[in-house]
Image (cartoon, rainbow, N blue to C red; front, top):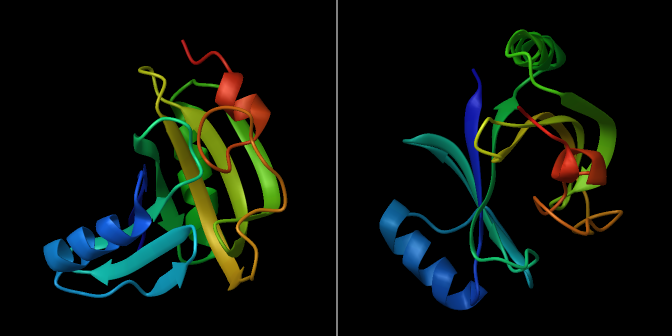
Length: 145
């Protein structure tokens, strides 16, 4: 079953961790000096915060697949939306090794479709000049309409 992913850029990580822990009634499942994540079952969401993006607020949204077949299905639906999809492939981002694709919706919001293969100890193997925290330059600057 797919899981909704929301990543929010915050100014103060500690204050935000306290707020979201109270809101969700749960402590984060992963905490790093610059990042926290709640892998919630109710609501079924992967909710992450970090202080990596320039602008505060919603950084990107996504759908997290549990296996390769689910990821293929999401990618097929993205292709039907007739928007430019950037298949990033295997990458390291948000303390995880994942297989990812990116698209911007008609309003310019970055969406990722991904499957996490394993946790890692670094936030990202690369940095992005614009857009979502881990979005490749192609996805951050692509024209969607």
